[in-house]
Amino acid sequence: MQLEVLSRPAKGATQKVPLLFVHGAYVGAWCWEENFLDWFAARGFPSYAVSLRGHGRSAGREQLNDFSLADYAEDVARAAVRLPRPPVLIGHSMGALVVQKCLERVAVGGSGPLGAAPALVLACPVPAYGLLPSSFSLAFTRPALFAGLNAVASGGRASPQVLGEALFAALPGPEQLERCYRRMQGESRRALLDMSGWGLPSPWRGRRPPTLVLGAGKDVLIPAATAQGTARLLGSEFRLLPGLGHALMLDAGWRAAAESIAEWLEAQVL
Picture (cartoon, rainbow, N blue to C red):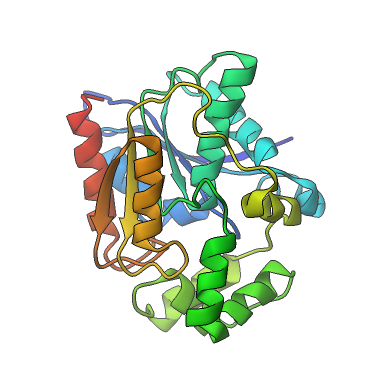
């Protein structure tokens, strides 16, 4: 199955470890292209972003509802094997679960580029126990937002305003909001079931490379306290980004997230 992989070559004489970015639900690799790919490439990191099958310009859109988190993990493995050396895996939201599913896949089937991944970054990760607790909380605290998002999960469309409220700390300008809205897409119903409890990764399986977990202080979908719980479960470092919403790579303060990741990677001597 053909996969879209966006890339930016590293700038400068000294190239650092490659980065492979994995997007969350309802989007594609384009979400990393807006800001992150060029920013990290300018700092010496060869930067790549994969569109999981059925997303972006990857094949499989007509079969989208059949795809599982395990299928998405296979896509990440296929993208990683093309790179010159094992990459740091950086997953956002659903993509953070996919990254953890990659390590589970390695534990079952051997090593390869994912087994040698030098580090992981999990940004606003869907927790290991799934989406249901966060969904119930959102239903009680933000019922209108919950209804709009539920319509999207059922194959419908939400308004740009609902999208903005869900993803950003504050509503962006109308041009950016409309641009993101046009590029949003459906998500696999099977993957959504997996995230609700049917196909969650087992965090105790497989090796545990150094891992950074990021929580966004204005995230209404995966609250920062939930992200911190993921860090505790994994025994990982946690960093809070106070002024950012769920889509931290697109939010107005995205540089704070990028700088936090880069600083952590440098501290790992990667």
